[in-house]
Length: 293
Image (cartoon, rainbow, N blue to C red):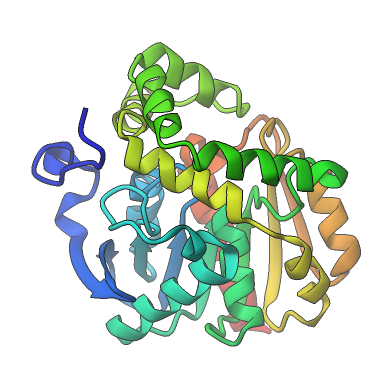
């Protein structure tokens, strides 16, 4: 079992492969997909995912935007980074370096789960200045809320044991295990979607990055700083999300009352994969409202 996905093997039929390129920035080699023309729209996937998460949504958005979607550090086909750089500020700095290397300034940004937190950190730190940020089932509350410190310590302990990512990868090599993990998020993916996640889950390096993010994630400073967010924020939640309970979006809106909340009935944590056309229409609507304002 290889530690990291190999582009010549796993990438041979990767979704939207024709849009893929490799860019060196922040000391690592990034896999980035770029498609379409127009205003730059940055898409950031969540923990343990990769660009395949946007496989159906990105081409729809590329009709109106220049869509830029990287694999986060250590995820998918992007190179790994030291554990300290898997923190929220570390991820934000790395993505900002990638944008600088590509000479891109997003006017709109959308992030799924942990990707939404990275975008908010980047905006709060002045690394990006989009008009709007769209949080797709954003993981914006500390894991376990009051018990966050325990979960973080446990994740650090796990990621510090070198056999743990390999053990996770060995378990996830069974497609049924990957399918069950995805179903537990409240989403139902087609066979292609399950296969792509299962393909990544077989690699200990990919899972080590996901565990490393959990171990180094601290959302308390983000929530403290949120009231000074300059871009408009739209909180999109799947009503059936079992990974990030929809009630957490209400908690975020209490900190930032100007945020808009949109609920998607019948969809789970991977709502953008379940209904890409609906989410594309929503993102276009946010952009159109900004232009009309």
